Length: 399
Image (cartoon, rainbow, N blue to C red; front, side, top):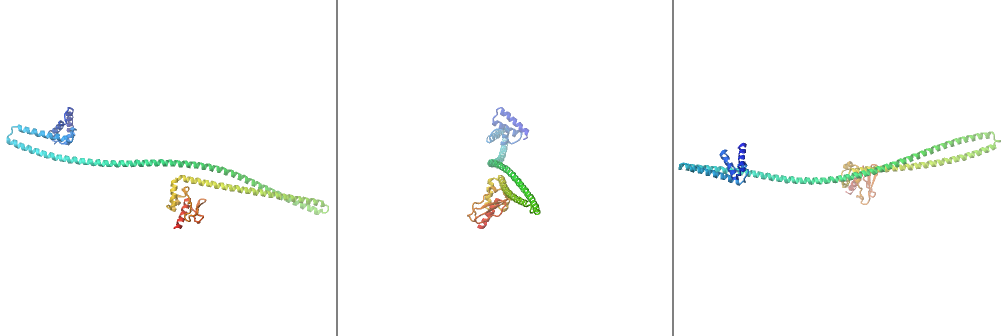
């Protein structure tokens, strides 16, 4: 049946429905048009598709009523005609055979339709079950994804808060460190200025001592020349110049007194110079001490930077792994001083269980030793490596 014929039948049935026809009339009209006009055997699917009404039990009843009415009409027409009795019997037998064949074909077609509908229903039910299983699986996956998303969001919030706190702490520490560095730089400049002034004073004192020594040499040479001249004059005038000789002796005594006073002044200047040098040495010691303090502050700043790069949890975890011997020497060397801020030296020596290990630092090298059993970790590049070497030495001795 083509689409045009199907549309025509639907229009006729819609017109009958609008005129107030019942379901049975609509089904009878569809069966008549299919059987008589189109030569198509009426089926439940076809009639239901055309009428768009009736249930799965009503439409078979309407089709059965159509066949009953058709058989009754044929029987009436045969009985009403002027047909001989023998032909009537043969016609009855023919109609009975036709009815039986039609009934057999109808049962076969009904069986095929039922099998097809049953398979379609089973396939639809299987699809529904699969869809339900997929829906439940998707819902469970969606719930798990939502739970993971919520946990991830909470973790992200916690990490963001921790990062913000660490950044704030790092900024405060850097600000304090900058203030300390600026203060020590100012003090260092002031001490440098004082040292320069003291050095200038010492230079002036040395220049004054040199000047006095030059004057002393000049006076000595001058007085020596005068003595020589006086001796010559005395030799030339021995007798008449005795008074002048006494005068020269007095002058010599005066010169000696002046020489002793010059020597005393030279000694005083030398003492002042020694005091100035001692003071300069003390200032240099103070400068070195302040330089060491600046280096310590720089080390603390680097340690603070390292600590701000690794969180306390990560540093404590790495330190605990190293304490249990879970990290190799290569891994510890690769870490360097990144987690030194979180490393704590053992309170008691694990070998002798009596001494308290002491951590010593020599510039960029570390050494952990026990004063009781004299066990040592050896020179290490980081605090973590020193602690690890000390614990490894204690474990080797224990084994």
